[in-house]
Image (cartoon, rainbow, N blue to C red; front, side, top):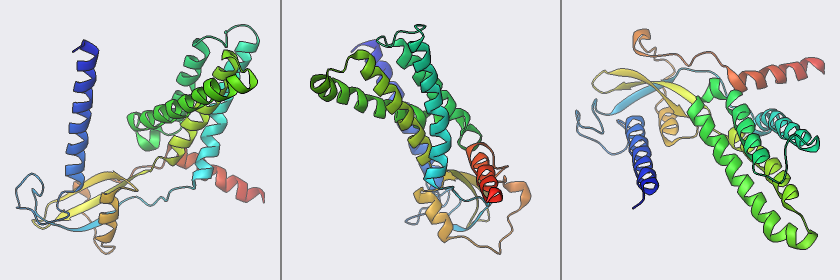
Length: 241
């Protein structure tokens, strides 16, 4: 077994363990009854919750338009550098630079809301998935049919990658903050994605009249990043009507 293969196996195993640990915490006290004090239900059943933030998710189109505009602008800039002879569009360098720029932009407009690692994952996967599909399309369909060369395939890959990264980030569910009270009286707060199984379960157990103790919970925080930018843009458009 090569060192690289071993590294990949270890990385995947650690990621899987971290994911399982996270989901165990999110689902604590939910589902079938668990013994209090056990790993799955350390404080017994979850009895009530309250959502601490007040924001709602913006439409996909609004978020996508914001990110795609900046991402495609970066791709266009790389194209201009190629047209000026600074970069060779037939090489791998423009594609690499474009990927770095686009992923960086996607993380920059969402980090305040999602966290850098989460937005990085979505942006990178979106860019790579769309880019690979575009490359295969160019190599096996457009090149034989229309004689598209490497520069054209690279340009198509970059445009598709930028669009894919923007779409992935725009589709990324936001993070919500909930306060939780368990049957033994323990209260804490937790952040989960808005479309997760845990979020749906928390909403079903929501108690609007409950006031969680302030010293045991954290607030949802100031709405920053992409969500705030989109809200400002929406208000500006409404004011101009």
